[in-house]
Amino acid sequence: MTSDHPLISIIMPCFNAEKHLLTSIASVFDQTYLNLELIVVNDGSTDNSQELLDSIHNDRLHILNQENAGVCNARNQGLKLAKGELIAFLDTDDTWHPECLFRLQQSLLTNKSAALAYCGWQNIGLLGGQGDPYIPPDYQPLDKLALLFQNCCWPIHACLTHKRAIFEANCFDERLVTSEDFLLWLKISANHPILRIPEVLAFYHFHDGYQATQNKAKTAINHWQAQQIFLNEAPDIAQAIGIERSKKIMLSELLQRGFECYWKRDLRAARVIFRKVMLQGYGSYQDWKYMLPSFLPYSLHALLLKHRD
Image (cartoon, rainbow, N blue to C red; front, side, top):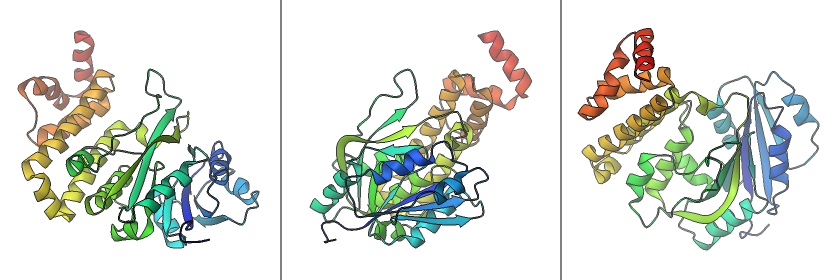
């Protein structure tokens, strides 16, 4: 292939994914962009994932079997095997529009200085408007650092990245269980231009099985920890955003996630998040009225909330 069609390496961590694995793999091989390889890292699956992988006969599929070490480790191991100069990630409950990789690659082709191109996405299986298609803003001409520092602005499967930029950012931080992609994109976007494709090309499928984002307290605190890691490793960026502004962005996001759990009556998650916020001395008087009972025994807090309801 010419430099206009470089090899794209797709990395797919797999752990007990027999229900959705073949659908996600088909989404890769149905891409109109043909110069690609798929690296599936079977991360200690105990279901039929291995048998399903062995049943696929495609020269573009490469399988790495390892003992269970977590999704960050699996992706990092896949990165070591990747031969492509461009990298995409697809989890076993994600799929792509057939034109996804072509559109993203074409965007990077037109702007050689950009390290990453991202697109719109849709959550499949969520009710109440949460499953509507979403196209994120073009962050590059905006207050990019502050906006990206606040929250993860695209899911892991909705972008295409130069491999050199990923290794420059030291790949995925294995200290994190969630928000590892948020930290990686933040590091890359802080040092390179990024591009937006204003089309919905990536799909995340919600299902009955375990998904990492189901643990709201752990997800919220991991996000806060990712922000702290970023500021510690990039003090110049922290100065650019502003120390006090950075702290406010971090804690206001954490507080908001606590209240989201609280109003949904996920009291156990809300209590964990609220205590973390209070220990940082953050929040208004009104916020503290809601947060303070989190230091009470759970049964008493639940009883007070039931009485209030």
